[in-house]
Image 1 (cartoon, each protein chain N blue to C red):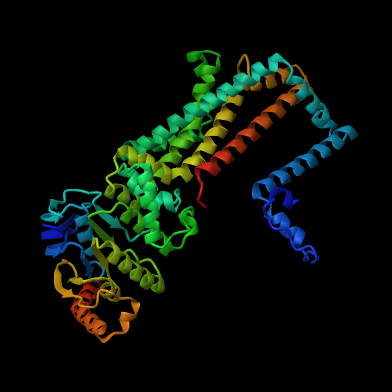
Image 2 (cartoon, each protein chain N blue to C red):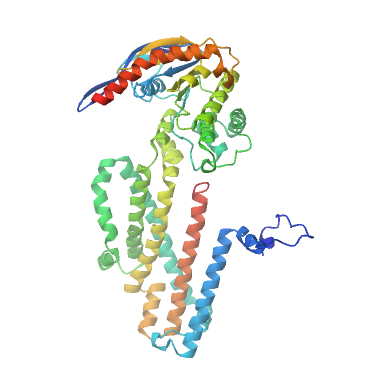
Amino acid sequence: MAVGIEPSQQAPPKRLPPPRGARWRAAQRVPQGVRSAAASAVLLAVLFVLVQIGVASGALRQTGLPLPTEVVGSTLGLLGTGGFWSDFGRTCLEIGASIVAGCALGLGAGIVFWKLPLLGRVFEPYLVSFYAVPLVLFYPMMIVLVGINAGSIIILSSIMAAIPLALNTRTGLQGIRPVHLKLARTLQCNARQTLFGIAIPAAAPMIVAGLRLAVVYALIGSIAMEFTTAQNGLGYRIRYLYETFDNKTMFAYIFVVLILSVLLTVLMAMAERVLLRGRR
Amino acid sequence: MEGIHLNDVHVQFDHPSGITIAVDGVTQQVPPRSFVSIVGPSGCGKSTLLAVIAGLQPATSGSVDINGRRVTGPDRDIGVVFQEDSTLPWRNVRENVEFAMQMAGVSKGERAAKAAAAIELVGLKGFENSYPATLSGGMRQRVALARTLALQPGVVLMDEPFAALDQQTRIFLGAEVRRIWEQTHQTVLFVTHDISEAILLSQQIWVMSYRPGHVIDVIDIDLPDERDASIVSSPRFNELHNRVWTSLQKESMRGFQDVETA
């Protein structure tokens, strides 16, 4: 109930019966985040139960889906094995490193393209068309150059993450309201002050949108390349289990990847709230 | 050499189709601690002149001196309040007001004290933690004003700061600016196209002609120092209004003709 979440709110006078619809209004006072989290939880639970019934009754036999309860059970079982943590750690390292490197690269490139418009105009068409290319295709080339290791995956995933961020950063910086730059001039801001005090915060909505894309691309890139060729990692393991017909364990790994992506999305939403504080 | 001194300021813009003379030889001065307004038809170069004084735009020829120093570029001692909303949407009111001081390297403690004083001066007490998105246009202009005043610049330049606001807010904020000026007595140069606003606020009005812009009339406003919006109905106000309007009328008509024949 709302009272539990917002203890500071005043209790209604006891003698009066609560007006019609009071429960609904109380529900509306619950923070948006809590409500949508609750909605997602209910939705997932319903899906879980439906699949469970479907598999148990044989209606979903064709799909090869194991019982969700078994998947949860084998996922929990995975947590005790060293092999799982080695795969998980490797994938997290790849994703983390490509997010960090990709963001640095993308932000830097976006700023350079903004500062040097000629360079920006020359490179933008290439970036835009590169954006549409499934860069995973260059993985074999990268393997030849770097080897079958985390390095080659991190390099390509970083580039995949950097491109949307670079484009968004440039667009955001170009959209700064001229009056804000005029303000910076009248206050005699130096280049650093103008960049960090005005330009980047002003472009923040676009940059944050680019950041979301960067994180998604780093995740997709890393898992997909592991899936193709690797010696370790969640993507590699899923493929291995799939080839050895270990359905139950494979779904446990897929479940872990799903949790990882949900976790990243939630983290990004939280970062967005902090970075875009005060704005609509 | 206190105050603002303009010595034969010319500004012209070259473009492919020819040359536009925006400001054509303005020689005037704003005495220290006084409030002067520039009134003129739109396109008369008054904002250009203000940009030159602010050091944002170089003059083609001529010079500007402020408190004995030649203007060669932007200077923190020249406070500017813009026509557009210049509040920073990612900072709350207090952080917005502190921004100018932060860029100038003012210490944290001093910043907080001066920001609090400036916020109180513009009547935004209680809104320190609000973000611009939740404030009205008039309140955002107050934030911009507080940000400029908190730096305590030698001169304050205002470029039609209330042009985007509705009539009521505009009169109300005009009276506020006058009240604030009576407290701070900073040297102010105020650009507007609103004659009543100019008379209500200033000690002196410069009337600018349509392009090429130069000052065609200087009118001293001999209204009492203590004035509020009620002075608008006094006979003297009407006389001054007529005087400014007569000077301006010919110029506005010329501007219209120019636009229509263009």
